[in-house]
Image 1 (cartoon, helix red, strand yellow):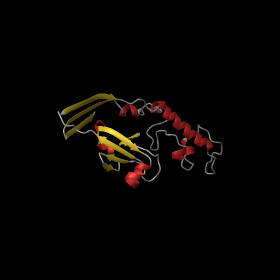
Image 2 (cartoon, one colour):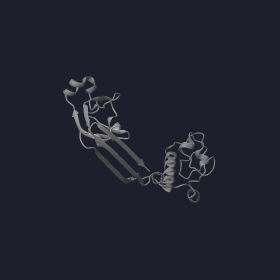
Image 3 (cartoon, one colour):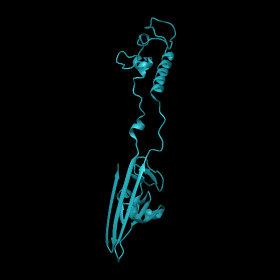
Image 4 (tube, helix red, strand yellow):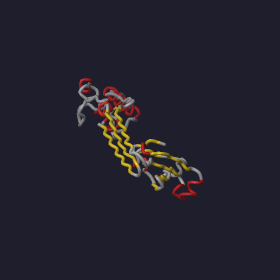
Length: 212
């Protein structure tokens, strides 16, 4: 079983098709379901689970069982005194790790190094009156003579639409320096309440879940 954002993805016979569904046939209390069984059933209500993966699955369910069959039997009420079950879960969830990313100063240096390297690799063109080999100290006025200069060679200098000057530490210090992972993720409270009443042929089940 592979956990996905919308429940469980079950693969019994592997991935046999790129364009078609590889999900097995779910049979819940005798009723066939093409998919999504684990999204509709509370796992606490499952009494037993059986997997058919051999020729028996196609022999019984035909082509619908080609990817295997998952037979789910849910809990049933029993004749006698009613039984009330309460399950309460409370907890917290938090990120286990964050992805290392560049901070502001590292990004600025990486940006400058990339533009300078592209500039050094570019051959001198005829439209450039300065026939000397390129240097990382060349001003933007020379770099702008080359095609696609704004996206390949020019270093932001606070002019011509650039808000910050990457060559001025005082200007760079005014740039935002946010790690958005720290801004987006926080300690989250989780609460789950389950109440079920069984007895005879009567069964009621309610599920409440709140994530703050």
